[in-house]
Each structure stands twice: as C-alpha cells, then as structure tokens.
Length: 178
Image (cartoon, rainbow, N blue to C red; front, side, top):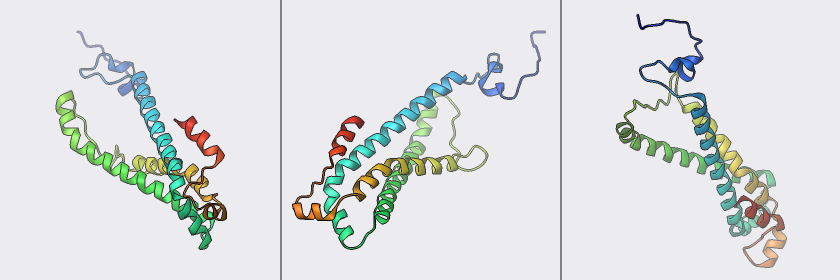
C-alpha cells in the first residue's frame, strides 16, 4: 500500500527527481556540475603553471634553440619538438596519476564506504577520455612555450654570449599567469 509505482524518464534515474525515494540515492546535477567545475579549474591552474615554468625555463634553453637553428632546424621542427616534449610530460603525468589512483582507490573505498571502481575499457571505460585529455593538456600546455622558444633569433643570442633571451612580453605574460 505504501508503494507508488510511476513511470520516470530515463534521464532522471541517476541525476533527477527519481533519486529521492531510492534506497541508495545518487547525486544531483548541481553537485556534479560543482565538482566538474572544480576539476576543470584545477586542470587549468596546472596548465597555466606548466606554461609559466616552460617559459621561465626558456631562457635556459635559448642557446640550445639558437644552435639548433644555426644547424638548420626550421621553426616547424622546433615547435613540433617542444609540443612533443609537452605531450611526453603530460603522458607521464597521467600515467603517474593513474598509478596513484589504483593504489589509493581501495583505501578510499573502505573509508568512504562506497563501491567505486575504475574501468579503463568497456562501456564505462575512461581510456578514450584519458587519451583525449592528455592530447588537449599536452597541446595547450606546450603551444605558447613552443611559439615563444621557436622565435628566438640565433645571432642575437649567440652574440650576446649569455643564456638569457628574455623577450619583453614573456615577463609580463608570466606575471599575468601567476
């Protein structure tokens, strides 16, 4: 007599009003959106920090870039090298993060009392989104440093006999990023 059966839209099963009377209620859209925004902000802060560190290190790599240009490297090759390095750092970071998640997840499950699993392949697999995230973060984090480093003029850097080649805009960009 206490059971009221009614039809519910499939979209409301996990994140909608159908969760109110469930034995194990799920989340609501607002909580999911809040955590998504927090995750994206943290990811953006990491990208900004990476760009900042890469441009700061550029002064140490000015001689390397100048010598590579003198030896015949084109700007496209230099951009590809620096974006490739960024992709490599992004890939290694993701592999480290996934290894840490695999180590910490059992303890977190026990502490939170939830049945949380991480599936890499299959219907709910995260392998494809992880691959896309590595590509996006690697490209976003390496694009400006690649453009900045590849525009160094070898004659000026080698003639100055210093390893610093600070462009006027790079200091302002780094201060804005900080």
